[in-house]
Length: 127
Image 1 (cartoon, rainbow, N blue to C red):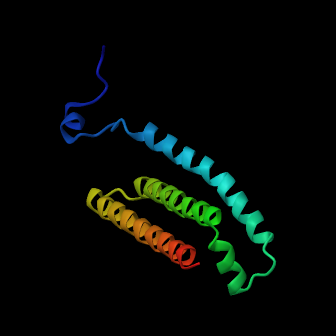
Image 2 (image 1 turned 90 degrees about the vertical axis):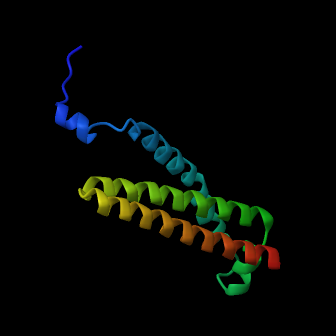
Image 3 (image 1 turned 90 degrees about the horizontal axis):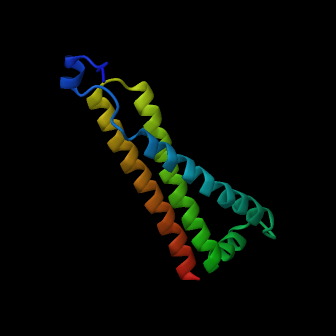
């Protein structure tokens, strides 16, 4: 078997990290999970009798609605994090800047997801 990599690229660790396929499939699965959740959200909001604060709060305080909304938020932000990391991989060549960007993307997605889930739980549990 002939090697196609140069000794310098082997030392620097250049080449496949053998992780792209898993990342690809997780991103596709989260996208697939988001399809029914977004469709549910569109129909559920369209079926609301009014778009006033009280109606939306009452709708969100139902257990099924709260669970589906939490699923939508968590899967949506996880999917967004994966997509933004792909953009960073494609367009940021400096390793240190890319690592800092990955950390910022992860923390940003986590903070926004926790804030959204906390908000839904606060409304759902307050009744």
